[in-house]
Image (cartoon, rainbow, N blue to C red):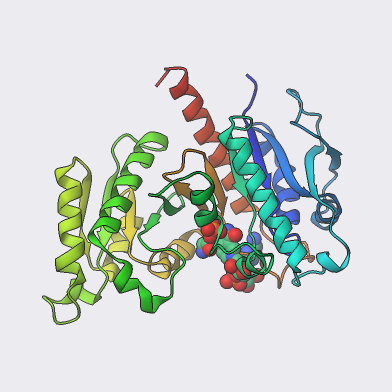
Length: 338
Ligand SMILES: NC(=O)C1=CN([C@@H]2O[C@H](COP(=O)(O)OP(=O)(O)OC[C@H]3O[C@@H](n4cnc5c(N)ncnc54)[C@H](O)[C@@H]3O)[C@@H](O)[C@H]2O)C=CC1
Ligand SMILES: NCC(=O)COP(=O)(O)O
């Protein structure tokens, strides 16, 4: 069977991206499930391979990797030719930020045209992306725009816990204003639909409260009763297996022991703190709701480790493997086998 092509964006070339990609591509568990195509910078990738201590050879391609990839070869579409100054570890320039943007846009276009089956992204610096002239808070929002998607969800997934976020990259002070009936309902529905499509037939979803003790009957805030509870009730009315709002301080304990398939959370750190406590090494960030498949590592550029060879590549391996699994589910659905 010809394996699906997964476009792997290099992320920030001054962070750990190139070295974790090199480590991941040296893993038989990755090479046997997909045909990887790296989108990035040759100098940065050569450096990443050397730092990772892998016996890999880079081969530039203008289109796609061959149907039968050669062992030990990393296929690269060279989309930037950054200078030494642009590649200084931990110091991305505007040119580096613009390069990260181009890797992502090219991968999205390849996915949209069906040329590749999915994309898996290495971490970017959002600050550098913006300095490069591209004003997005992260991949998720950029990909939503590139694919014309209004309702999208950031989910972080591990074997014990999966969290989906109602608000993503927002200042905490803005969160209460952004937790609306429509947004909570849409997050539950997108999570339900894509989890059913890619991971499980009918997920059981728990929804967190925003306030301590679900607002304690209005003493600590009204959002839980006035917004979240009606949104969960409406999701149930539409056929979703959802429960909530439930106090966030205890909910993750139950979710991690297997009572729920996913937890819909109101804001970034509410979901990502428990997720990273359990799955820092091997968690995957997957964007639900898009017409394309996109997974990512669960961590950032780790400038403190870049160039040391110490960065753990388990999340990159998991992200590429999940992208390949999702691509195969989709291929089976398209040919009517599911
Ligand atoms: N998917 C993405 O593109 C993401 C990008 N970021 C970006 O990364 C930059 C740095 O963010 P931080 O909050 O410092 O988070 P970070 O994840 O880069 O680093 C936090 C801590 O985790 C460690 N760490 C991270 N990845 C590791 C790995 N693979 N192996 C071993 N240790 C690892 C780092 O050494 C550091 O001590 C920011 O610009 C942020 O926007 C952050 C999260 C996700
Ligand atoms: N903390 C997760 C994160 O920042 C990932 O953002 P994105 O670049 O995947 O949108």
